[in-house]
Image (cartoon, rainbow, N blue to C red):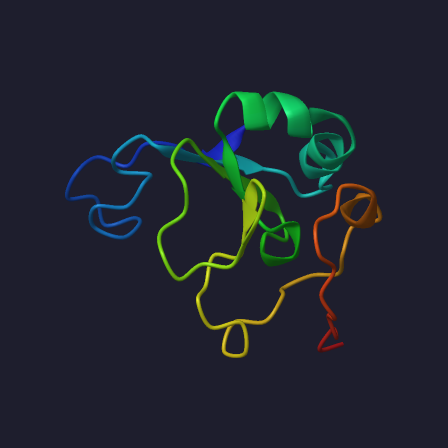
Amino acid sequence: MPWTSAWYPKGSKVGAPGSKHQLLLALDWFDPQRSFMNWLLAYGLGAAEALGMYFEHPQWTRSWVHGQIVPPGDGFTRWGIFFIPYSDMVKNPPTCAALPQQMAANVPVFDFRSAA
């Protein structure tokens, strides 16, 4: 499965300065069909937790999976190994509908209204 962003060299114009991507602590996997996230929710949570992984909440990652090997910073809402990548959910609402596996995996489901 390819990724869209792995390591960004220091001083890169892509990503935030000092980001977890620049420090090689985070990767983004391209996942337009959401098959990797579906697998993670259904079968991979135990392994990911044992490895010390953390993931952005699936409703904020429409076509990718963001994984990192350090806990999210203060101010992020967190449920186990999942976190919302923004401290203000009103300004930054979910970008996609929930996956069916979220409820079974005890990952909160948020209301999403498509602009269409």
